[in-house]
Image (cartoon, rainbow, N blue to C red; front, side):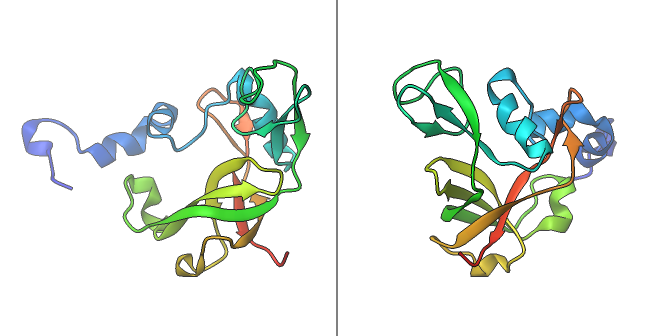
Length: 164
């Protein structure tokens, strides 16, 4: 990174390292829990992967929303997923786009198609990134509990290869 101190501005890395929750919110390091997704995030605190289900047509969806993506019904509920699925697509990240991720590269960002149907964006861990492949069976696990920029607790769901 180019040193900008000669222009009177601080280095970007220094500013982001000390800024705290606002920077986490802006760069997407932490989710923001909103009413439409609170059922999902509440589940993560108790280590349950939840998906939204329409009581009118049976459609399951992620992310949650105010109505069913299939029939537009507002009669929705959060149900516990079995937490297993397959890698639908993935990318191996080799370059950290933020200083907080320097010690994590390379890592896998993947779309996981849950056995119930919805696709969730997450990480695949506990495996060499170059061994991840489309169709790999995975199971959910939950990262350490944290709080969003507004103090709401959550755990990030992540996936690792499973025997199933």
